[in-house]
Amino acid sequence: LQDHLGIGNGETTEDGMVTLEHIECNAACDYAPVVMVNWEFFDNQTVESARELVDRLRAGDPPMPTRGAPLKTHTEVSRILAGFPDDLADVGPSAGPASLAGLELARRRGESAPPRPGASS
Image 1 (tube, helix red, strand yellow):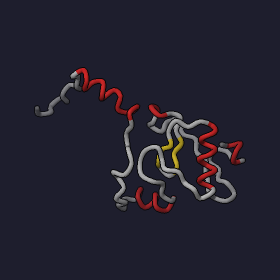
Image 2: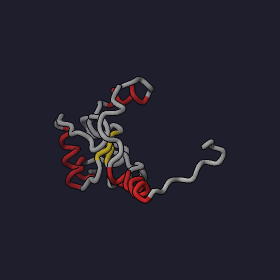
Image 3: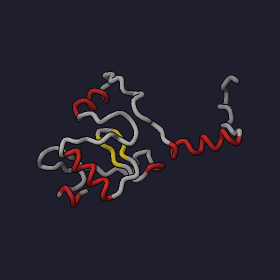
Image 4: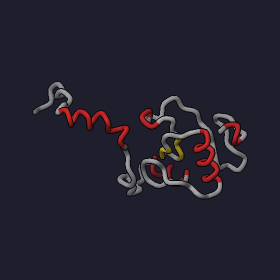
């Protein structure tokens, strides 16, 4: 994306549409590599799909994130992060099959986590 956009990490395109940030962990290794746009996930990205994603965003054609609610603008996301409600918490999937594979396997096997110390049963 740096080559495609002509900017480096921590930089913004001249049109102000895209800022690149490099982070080590997006807490989504079950869907890596991921790209986040305004806090929404685009999973299982390739070089080509990441370029297409950025091109669509810059063209005003935002795709639906892989998980979560439809994309919001930076201003809308800032309000959500400040605590204003958006009524979209349950829109779109938040966890997919890769995230839930261990839980499903444990259920099939009849396994569960041990009780927390001091927790009433």
